[in-house]
Image: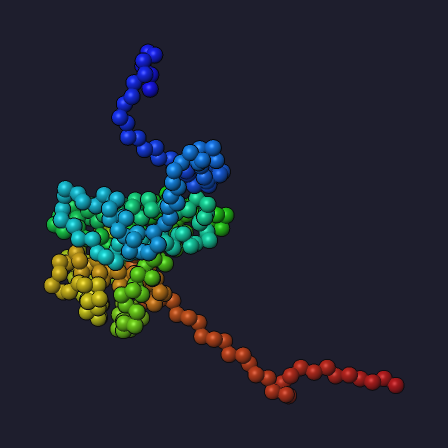
Amino acid sequence: MQIKGYPIRLPLDVALVFSANPEDYTARGKIITPLKDRIGSEIRTHYPATVEEGITITAQEAWTRRNGHAMHLPSYVQEVIERVAFAAREDKKIDKRSGVSQRLPISAMENVVSNAERRAIRNKEKLVVPRISDVYAALPAITGKLELEYEGEMKGADFVGRELIRTAIAKTYDEYYTGANVQQIVQWFDLGGEIQLSDSIPAAQALENLRGIQGLIDKLGPLGVSQKEAAEQQVSAAEFILEGLHAHKRIGRSEERVFKAGEKKPEAVREKSFEADDRPYRQRRQFN
């Protein structure tokens, strides 16, 4: 380089890094040819190939380590959040050109933890344990990261977001409870049982209500939770089971988060069989 006409050689070690935005930002989606010709190597990034990879990235980037209460982040909550992004990338109502970046689960995770932290502070609880209801509370962090196609716009962002969460819950539930006998829980609701679980209810009160559901607390084992664990952990695990049953339409749930019996399928309408004498006929007259 030259400074006021004097050539100077400096021992520089410079690396230039270029990046291209998605197609919908530039209408091209790649680096221009003259510039690309001067680049040594091109690396194409991609979405996480597995849920486990996504969880690792989200855990690395999300702001979850806070200087407040002690926190326990259940693995099933992490999986549900990550599977929301995976479901969105396959959904036809989501614009594929815009894509669904890893920022969606990262932002959702931060909102989930914040909502759980708010509940713990309001209820004066010492342990922060996110629940599935916190994932629904983080819906704005999900819909804000999605570009919808025409069909999605017609249904609305909130509807699409809730549908994605429900799909993620169902797939995560299957990872833990495929083949498990939960008929006793379903039967409790079929016999008229109801329970409301808002995202702000204290853990001690929620656990007392959940213990009234036959067989529910006994089914926490696959989630790594026993009855010796803190009330916050038991409530989170029990709610996940109920949300999983709701996602599979075995029990119902209202918008006020009241879990109740699922809708019964109408019995098949029996087709009436007509005998030969019952069949309509046309009488013909012959005129001479």
